[in-house]
Image 1: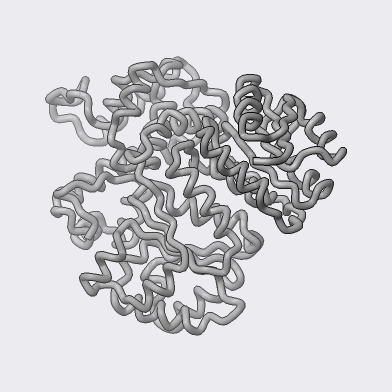
Image 2 (image 1 turned 60 degrees about the horizontal axis):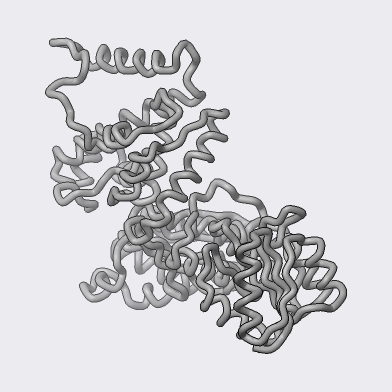
Length: 454
């Protein structure tokens, strides 16, 4: 390599390692822990490449990218960051950073990217457009699989291509779709989610197109669309025109297998799969579980008004080892539930096991009385829940939390009683089948061999 590299990082060890590696590769290196010093060097015309951290003692490296672009159009910047979220990758891409790597990074990989950056000339960058700050997305991960996904999301945000988002239930497919919309040029336009029933007849299609005009239309679980809905969808896609919405689809089912079985139209598949984003299951990125847990607890602490919770060491080990069949949604729901029900600042392994139904259950509920009516049993458990807060009121939102806790076992037991037949289960419960399907997804109802999505 040949050139001068400007390194900005508040970690002395990282500065030393990068300086030594780049010097051995033939580069001149200027290293600093100050963003202000970096910007002075850039303004003075020093450097052929910038390698910068995000969080610096005197500023934010990402926020400095537009200024670097104005001062030195074409100067490549490689962003390195310990903030391993999708937002960092998107912001780096929007500011037209040459590349982005999460910490801890692989040094040989960084050296290869640095060599490419020094060899290539970049086009004059556009001014970065301010984007909304979305901190609620639990799309956190430093594993290679998630970082690759983040970079691909950043690249396809404004591409004029349909997007197919695949992955198991609870992995965050809908969040990916929402992030693509919220950070794209269409963010001020409608974001509409549609299911098979919404495509009913010509009127249904025209209504959908009118609602989502110029925005984003997400086809939820498109693999479940029946033959009629698929045919209507093909016709809709063919007549949308230039002002039509961007199409995104989600599917937890392998569409390739549906194609082979003849239950999914090939022409529809090709229309929907311009770009495919595969969201990995949580068991495929175990190293992200501690980071996700911290993120959920920190967000819950903010939402619940300063209730501080953390996992014990045993709980951390258990959470990391658990298979999490419901993926990120199950992990998030479990931890948020424990933030409410746990009476201690530290959540124990036993509490997590109990929340997951793995603790040994006694023959009868504790304190159950013979002949006790359901309403009396519920009242006793609710009284215990209020008592757990030591004379203080529980956090706001008790009504919704209690209903949610009641719905989960009710739907699970009803599904078991009907051998997983959703039509029969919906009839038993007295609700619409589409409503049941949404409840299964929202409440993270675990799918077993006896209980399949029909």
